[in-house]
Amino acid sequence: MSITEELAHLISVAEFSSLPPEAVEAAKVVILDGLAVTLAGSTEPAARIVAEYTREMGGAPHCTVFGQGLKTSPVMAAFANGVAGHVLDYEVMWYPPTHATSPTLPGILALAEKHQASGRDIITALVTGFEVQGRIRVASAGVEPRGFHPPGLVGVMGSAAAGAVMLRLTPEQTRMALGLAASRAGTVSANTGTMTKSTHCGNAGRMGLEAALLAAKGFTANPDVFEHRNGYVAVLFGEGFDLPAVTRDFGNPYRMVDPGIAIKKHPSQYGTHRGIDAALELRQTHGIDPAKIRSVHIETPVMQYVDRPSPSTGLDGKFSFQYTVASALWDGQITMDTFTERMLHRPGPQSLLAKTRLTMDPNIPTDFDQMWIIVTVVTEDGAEYSVRCDRPRGIWGNPLSREERLAKVRQCAARVLSEDGIEEMIDSVEDLDDAIGQDVLELVGLLSRAPSSST
Image 1 (cartoon, rainbow, N blue to C red):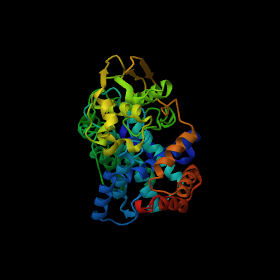
Image 2 (image 1 turned 45 degrees about the vertical axis):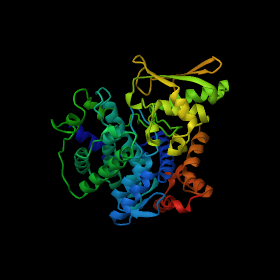
Image 3 (image 1 turned 90 degrees about the horizontal axis):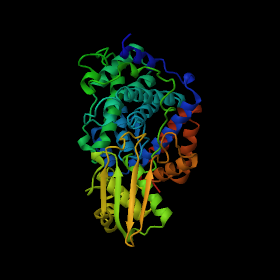
């Protein structure tokens, strides 16, 4: 049996009854965080542009574009909601690194809405779609970076897998869906820090879902797309890819459980979180007045794409060690508004940026599980303070409490929903494993509200 065939079989036999309770609970945490972040993202310029584009393109009005008062086809809803889910760079992070929610959850919910699927169907599809992405990331961990953004490579396969579960595809149909999805993989990391980055996730969700829908109708593809000499692995990853790891220990345990997920505390690139937390600790512990800082020194791993001393846009600032540390020191917090154009160009953070020096140390691991960052501040009176952050709160193994998670959910969802609507969403998702089709429709209906109805 080929790896492609084995993977297709594992996907096609996925059942809620086989999921351990820990995976079910993790899935509900991911779904709640994902919905809240998507609602917040729906108010961002990139998401509004995509929603306008989606409206102009038309499409059978079966599926909701969250926060926009719009319905469209399943694939366009997956695209629009995937963009909104990723544009803030606030969604769940994973290990090895990828964003697994925005390529999968929107397509799952689109099919759930169209076919009135149950909450258990949604959870099963999400866990399976996550597992496929996770196993591919493990298999590719030894491969040198090639300038791709991971969700564009593995998200499309996770979306196809999730769609296969929702559509109850046969093993052979699932095999075709994987083969077709492989031809839709790809991204260019040069677009990190622009609106286009969010389309990496939205397009992965759209293309993976389309692959599953076409496979359901009998569309064909190479049946062994992982193994083929010009297939998914050879073309996109090359030497060093551990092919057997794609199916090895699949679901035993589920990677959503072990090592687990990271709930982002800050809406920025995950490598910046250690610098942010170190800066916040410095300010809080030592009562530092940011206006009296003489110099700031940040020691990081070698991560060239996060070395942005003068970000030109808010999106650019999400990938700047320097701006995120300067903002944390100046404001004592990082919020979604930190990365607006108005906040970026304020004199205070800009003055700290001019005083900030960055050193990239090759002895510090770049691995998100092992890296650390040191922030050192010297004040005008000559006092020097330094903090090293090894593991930010929310990372796998150092989780946020339920109340901390819900504080983020409420803050994000408040951009669109009323307080009552937010609590209704929380209750619905936390009881999702008992939800029938009508319950799911009511949840999606709640999320459909246009920005004009926000509070």
